Length: 381
Image (cartoon, rainbow, N blue to C red; front, side):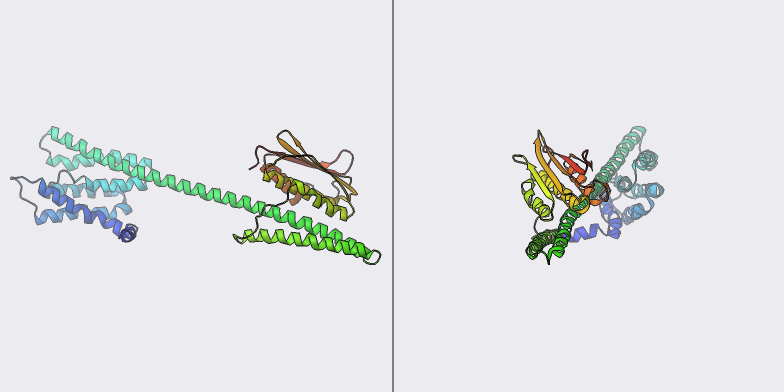
């Protein structure tokens, strides 16, 4: 039953004709109960008048109150003449006024509140016995009409508030979706770029030593296998998240600042002397671990890719409420390297900014390249 009523309430034809079906019986009943000895009971003319007087309401959504005002006033006069339902006849203009206040803005609602006064006076004037009755009936009916406008205005305000809430939720969803896409792009870049650079270097070593030092070449090939396997696992997890696979591994890196030895090992295998200085950091938020690890990973990847360095130093220390991460090398600095406009340095800066920290990179004073990041602990999600 509720489902049927819900479907009917969404049908424009049913909504348009509902007042013409529901109001006349109320008017006829009111006319019968308010009758007296000087007036005959409900007649066929009165019944017809009740339906004819409500008929203009079918056009209330199409024409609006202002176009319907003359027809509604004439309908009220007809109903009062044939039935004299003094208590319920005001329902006819109230239905149109509620519709107007719901669909129109505040200015139209205010104008309707002013325009309804002469309409009520014209409708009541022929049937008032004296001035006091005229004033009393006019004030009462005007109050009911203003109440209808207020109800419509409240409904309109609720609909607008709901529309704003829906728009805000959609905007927030789009923003979160954009942030998630950016995060996934950073993860893919970090995983793929670091793995590809390491594989490229190790494959070069293997190709160079395949004849002169087969054992060293085999060691490089084993390093390629391990690096590619780890990259494939991370990439598979990332693609699983993109597909919406609920069983996919978490996208965030499981490695943290305590796992930098593995990164250093990959560079050492490629011939770069990596020195790690990681102080006792104590408990850190997972977001700081992840951001710090990825910053070091991307920095060391750039050392392999661009710097042509023989030595790199990594310093991780806790300073008050921050974690300081520094990666320096003795390479050629910015020559042939990312100038800050590429995905690598931009991704590192975005990771630091996400924690309300900061990252700077550039040529080191003694030569080479330096990346320095500050990651606050108090703002980590």
